[in-house]
Amino acid sequence: MRLFIFAVLSALALSGPAFAHGTNKGAIEIIHPHINEPFAGAKTAAGYMSIANEGAQADRLIGVETDAAKATSLHMTEHGSDGVARMKPVAALDIPGGETVVLEPGGLHVMLMGLTATLKEGDMVPAVLIFEHTGRIEIEFSVDPADGVDHSKMHHTTPSN
Image (cartoon, rainbow, N blue to C red; front, side, top):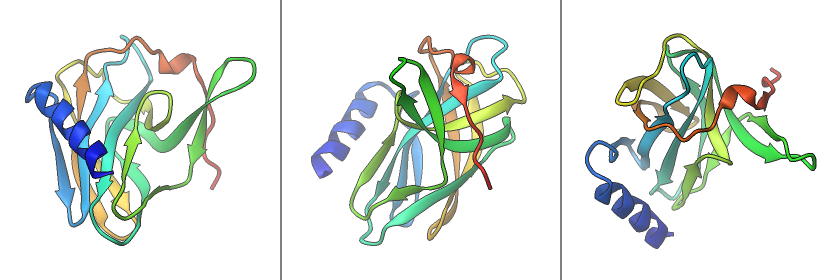
């Protein structure tokens, strides 16, 4: 696992200072939180990052807050037998001790729904990750170059509380 973390950090370091950022609190390290630039007029976007837990105790990501969207939630992309990508809400995300969990396109991600402003490449979007044990960690999502994925065309469900 340490080799994987080293590879992720090395790749980020080689990609230049604009792309290598993050923060840490206690045993939790947030590596390169970012949003791929949404298309003009988009009402949704997806946030990605790696979350490393260098401690022995597991933690859980239980929420995300940002003023950049009316609602946020954790999602997992699932591809149905019909070939359509669907977003399934995830109540919490386990971060086992000594491991790194990667939020990436086509998998786990933070869904930002009802964007409150246009997000442009180079913007920094303040947010707070809420962990069960570590508590609140302030981050900034960098808005990276577009990936061509239009998240508004995917089927999203909202978590039931």
